Figure 1 (cartoon, one colour):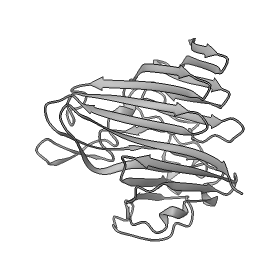
Figure 2 (cartoon, one colour; figure 1 turned 120 degrees about the horizontal axis):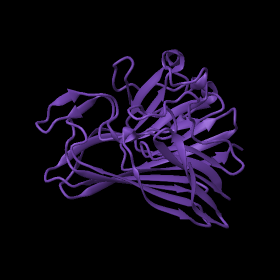
Figure 3 (cartoon, one colour; figure 1 turned 45 degrees about the vertical axis):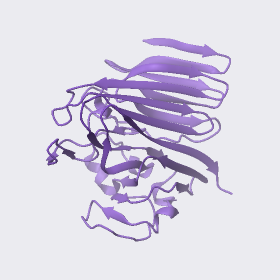
Figure 4 (tube, one colour; figure 1 turned 120 degrees about the vertical axis):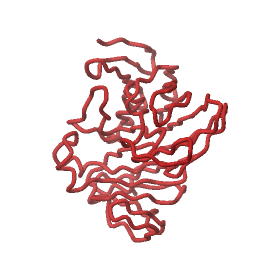
Length: 296
C-alpha cells in the first residue's frame, strides 16, 4: 500500500508498508529525503540533499512486532539498559531499553514547508508494562531541514511521581568506524560497561568496537568522519550523558546486523542513564540537534 499524505511544490510525504502489519512515512523534499517508522516511532533514515546518509540502517534488520529495528534512531524509554526502578525503589532486571521502540505510534501532525519537513508522532498508554504500569503520553517532534532536530516530550498522567531513564539511540552512518573519531570525548570521564570499571578517562583512538561506554557530559560532540571528509555535530538538551557503542568483532553474533555493518556506523546516544523524575501531571523533554558539514 502507498498513500500520498501531503504534496506541494516543496516535496511529498507518503505512507507505505514497511513490512506486513507495519507502516512508515517517507518524504522527498528539496532539502533532502528520509523515512520514519510508525512502529517504534523510529527515524529510519535522513539524507540531506547532496550528502551521504546521516543515519545507518542494517540490511538485515527485523521488521516485525516484538523485535527492535536495528538502525536509525531507536527510542530507549522508559528505561535504558536492562534495569527498571519499581515504585518501592527496588531495581528489577528487564529486557533492554523499554517498550517505546516496540510500540505502535500514531501520526499527530505532518507539515511540508519551504524550510523542511516536520513530523509529530504520539504514543499514549497505561498498563503497557508490569514494570512501568503508569499512565503516560509521549509526543515526538521531528524536524528535517538543513539540520535535524528531535524532541521527545514525556507527560506523566498518573497521580504519582515517575522515574525514567532513556536515550535517543542514534546510529550514525560513517565511511569507516576505524577512521572515525570523537575528539571531545577524550577528556570526559566514562563508565566502561564491558570491563565494569567506572570513572575512566582515556583517549579514544577510533570508534570501532567492541565499545560500550557511558560518558558523563552534556556538552555538544563532533563525530569526525575522515573517510567521508565530514563532521557530524550532535548537541543535546535535557540529557546528562552520551553513550558510545559499536560492537566490533561481536557483530558476528548479531543476526540483524549485516556482514561488515559494524564498520559503517557508530552509535552516539544522547541519554539519561540515571533515574530522572517526572512529577505527577507534568512533563519533561529531551532533544537532540544534528548538523553536518564538510571538513576543510
